[in-house]
Figure (tube, rainbow, N blue to C red):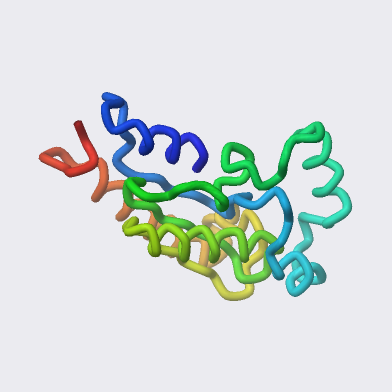
Length: 156
């Protein structure tokens, strides 16, 4: 997401993505989303203390709200269409919700699909859950639409 924002900020850039598909993104390294608390017991993959340790090592003292590290805090105007998939039972849910809300507010064609009762990485269970199959179907439709031949306002 940070790279998309950097590319969108340079309108003369010949390499403009036509869309972005994001699966359960980490968009806020400050960990301010309430789902870190509200989904903590339901999420089998993330423990806040472990995530904080990894973030601290990655940032090495850098500001967690710098848009390059946390795209939630960046300028999202001019981004191509974005589709986000997330499970309702993951601590990263608020990162997805807030990203899409900010993108829509910036005039971006953005959509979030939240899958009830699904944990982080549920799409990896394709063939085992109906939610994973449905999510993959929506992903395919989105990618087909943005990658279809023909003129697009997102291509140079």
